[in-house]
Image (cartoon, rainbow, N blue to C red; front, side, top):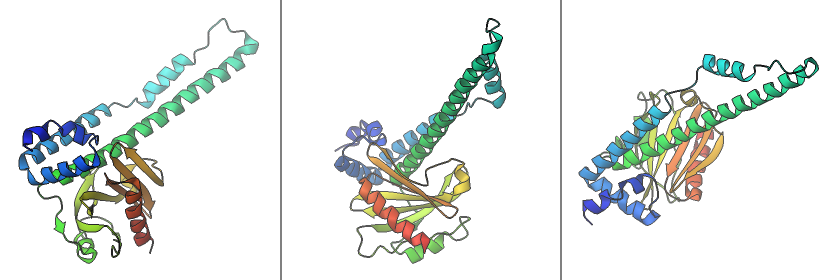
Length: 251
């Protein structure tokens, strides 16, 4: 299959809408084709730039206060004995609107974060050098991060499992360095991202699984660290790897 056929499927691939077998074939092709890898990486970076620009405007507290004041203005025709009822009703409406807006903004920021992690996962697979330390030995990969990131973590023993450690690299999120580990599951690749919890500044679920098309993302907090497991494998396989990491970092 020539590159023209692959090029026509770039957007479908990045949206995670290809069947699993085609996703695996696309991953393999991108890893071995510099032209397609550069194209995929460029599209990922463009998406991240557009997404960041879309989130750039946030209403200021002064703007919210001015709108709330306008909404809460009492009409002169309201009878005195009903003013407190009117005021309570308006206050309830304003509070509901503010809370609804706050939750909507938080949810949107979470979705942007998950999408950014998926883009980072895809960009890693599209790179000619996906990891900086190449090893299946956890005792080689873990020490490599010492002095490169401001925290430590443990890696699980993978004997008698279907997962294989491929290596790792330093990955940045919101300007803070963290660890990105790449695991193999058959022909598929799974990324594990680890960052200081304070970096995210988001009230994420302490333990949850996010699904978007072909990608599953599991997240949890251990100590002061936030873990993410991202891959186009099944939800059960993402949970299995996540469980191994949780056990290793609780010991």
